[in-house]
Amino acid sequence: MPSFILSAVQHRLKAELQTMENQIIQADKKLRKQVLVGICIFILVSGLLIHMMLAYLQECKSLAETDAVMAISNISHLVTIITIANAFVSSVFALYVFSVATKVLKSGRFPPEGMKVIKDTRLLTGRKAKRMAMGHILIGIVLLSTNALMGYLHLILDTLAK
Image (tube, rainbow, N blue to C red; front, side):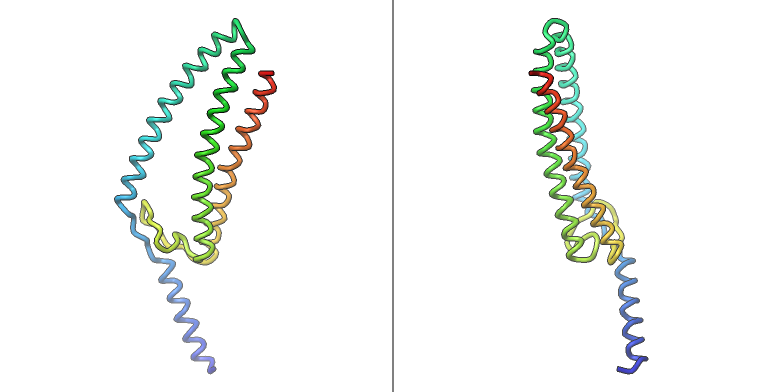
């Protein structure tokens, strides 16, 4: 193949790649609204749960003055509930993040084809997309590591309760 044809093909491929990398994926306004509403609901529910948990811990503090073993047992039960809730929530988020990373690695682009975004997002390809996928994998590992930390805390409280 003559070198001028090969050069023209390479130039065209580079131009197409640059065009793809400068492409902006438009935000889905409906998805953005749903995410913001979900975050607001999450904050409200979390605030209510924290308020209830603090009241329960205050009761445990009062109980500790008369029966320390029972107070530790009550706190251990609370940590069990928190551990189970954390395991569920963090595992669901980690699975989602891992699935996005897998799609990015398979497609070689971020966001993957068909994925809706909540803000205008520049399309990443090649090495930048792979880095984004690795970042997602790291986030998933950090999310799952909270399960180990909560399990360890639960184990410590169980040994204190005995």
